[in-house]
Image (cartoon, rainbow, N blue to C red):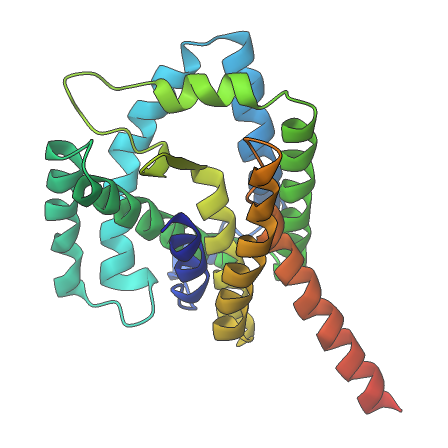
Amino acid sequence: MLIAAQAVTVALPGAGVPAWVAHVRTGAWALVLPLSIAAAIAAIEAAPATADALTWVALLLVPPGCALALGWAMRGGRWWLAPLAVPALALAWALQDERAGQAAGLVLVVGSCVTLGRLLAGAAPLPLLKAGIVAMAIVDSILVFTNELQAPNAVLVAASPGLGLPRLQAVGFGGAGMGYGDVFVAGVLGAVLAAERGPWVAAALGVFATSLAWDQMFLVVDVIPATVPVALVLLAIEALRLARARAAAR
């Protein structure tokens, strides 16, 4: 379910952004990708209470982000679909420990990542966003394989806004979990491909297949960086594009 959700996130973003996004266009936005992991982990290590703040940020911003995706940011988005984020939030709140509630939370997170990806694709140069995707996977891999991510991430996943409210700072289904950043990076890849009119269907299928292969590492370890399959698919697309350009030049 989590792998499928990540792949679907690649396929969903549309292209084009509001005019106001052009006024804040800068390459610095590409730094959001690697910093979203490194800064969060560093902040939680320095002050564990940061995780509580982040869970409130997710609770306040993820549902509106999903509504924006349903109404605008995703392919086929319509304004009258936006209110569907409300029952999704209600399910995620009322059935937190059941599959239906977990699926509803997954829908909310995927939608918010689609919106973020589309906005970033309009606010940052696409080559820099591609570099940011690869950089994010590298940072994620270093933190995971040096065991620097596991403890702070556990604090973040366990953090709760209280009052029985849903935790939307990560996604889970059954006994499996995935960080918000793992879905976020998929949304950025999908938005980049939508802006370039690239092979978004092939990319989504590629992320699904690559993730299935990558997840065989769970036979020997408990935690792996789920950003890596997204970066590998991006690199494969770029390598194929370069090869075609060279062949055309000949």
